[in-house]
Length: 468
Ligand code: GDP
Image 1 (cartoon, helix red, strand yellow):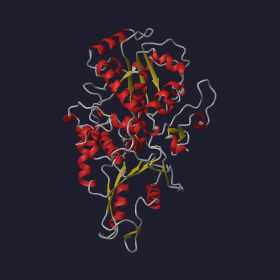
Image 2: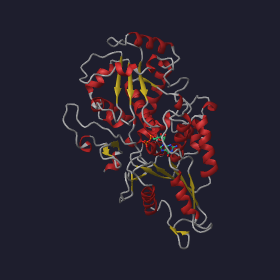
Image 3: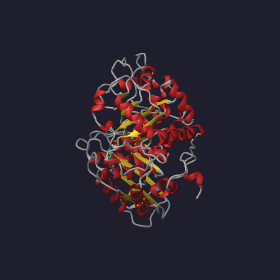
Image 4: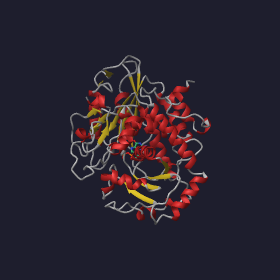
């Protein structure tokens, strides 16, 4: 086995017990080799982070000593500790959570903090531990599991307070007080946070563009990621290894249905409002996109032959949706074609949960399995604004075709457009500069940020060469 592939160009470190996380060593057998190599600087930052995590993380004496100190001084001015900590607290669906963990990890690297995740039972079976001989899960006996900390240690609106030993910052999209999100990249807030040994951060967003807006972080991110649209691609593949349970589901499904196909098309159909949006309108949109862009062949219903593709070749379509009707409808359409004429289209849909369920481990496993399978696609079609799709595109180095997000039964042309970057979109960027002036045009102030195609209020990192 080629070691270079196994460690993803030096992104991963060796030394893990293979049996405890089979996906870490086998994922390269399923995924194409990425043309994007991690930079030596990124690799050195990751190795440095791993050392910090190993010496300050849970199960170390240093961790217990520091946490005790923080706990004792939580109501006072910041105490000095030998390591600083960053607790990520979840909100919203799994896609939101995965992209926000990646952003939080980047922030942890940039600020030399140990990242700890508040993972409930619903997420314990999803991922392997990413850091050697340690855990990234906030120990269940930690007092900082209590929501009370969140209420009590809010960073004050005017940010004028002295730094405390514990601070809470809310970067959640729908949070009514936007002052934290607006100012997160600003030096005065970062200076305050820097003195705080424990920061609790809640987010459902990929706030990397906001970090990029801070001059110091910007310098570092530029050095770590010379190709700027690869931040999630690298950090996502570094952090999110399917657990053995998830890996078994993924590989069993892949072997049973997808491995024999000549091409894999991922089709993610996210319906944000099932009550107001008729299924036919969504199906029309999907067909208009996939047929017009020759992602799928047209079927001549008279002769029942498909119009493109080599005789005998197989295209597998992996449908991810809460609703089985989409997979069924597509399957019926292609079943009409007699075998042997043109290419065969085989349609698979692993699950149809009908609704999003919160705090449910089995439900999350299915979602994670589907995000991962979608990331193995050759061509990916996703729904605008869906973070579920963002995870798949980023892991898979895919610039997806973005389905227009219809909310009623309107028709839209074009039905989809191909994205210019595989990075997730940050839906909630600051609307002001730090000194308060409105920030209207990101691109002129930050040449590596561009308005998202699927959400004009959002921004994402773009490889400068693409932008020219
Ligand atoms: P977003 O809301 O589309 O940005 O994606 P999230 O992943 O944050 O939240 C949607 C959640 O609904 C997922 O995490 C799943 O729990 C569920 N869900 C939505 N679409 C699908 C799907 O296609 N397959 C599965 N298994 N679950 C889905």
